[in-house]
Image 1 (tube, one colour):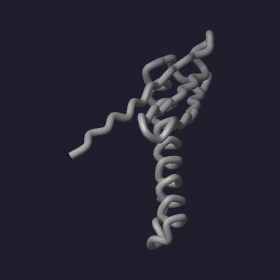
Image 2 (cartoon, helix red, strand yellow):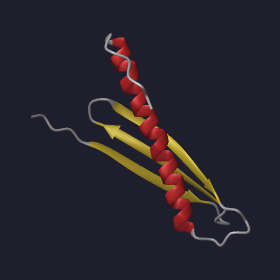
Image 3 (tube, one colour):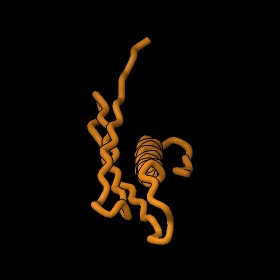
Image 4 (cartoon, one colour):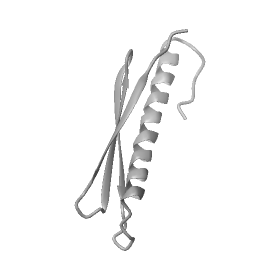
Length: 89
């Protein structure tokens, strides 16, 4: 059986006021290139600053977008090869 490794790196940055967090998820796949997705989280100014929550929300949103892109790629590949329709999500 052939083994493959795909790597996802998540880069997180926060603004100086901890009101906006941006996460960039980058997937590197040895045989199929790479994808990049972005997720953003914004804190309500009335809420207490808990940076970990912004990190989790932004990273989760970036990963969800990355998953949608991968499912879209698979659906396009199946359609191109004439297989049964695959629902992207």
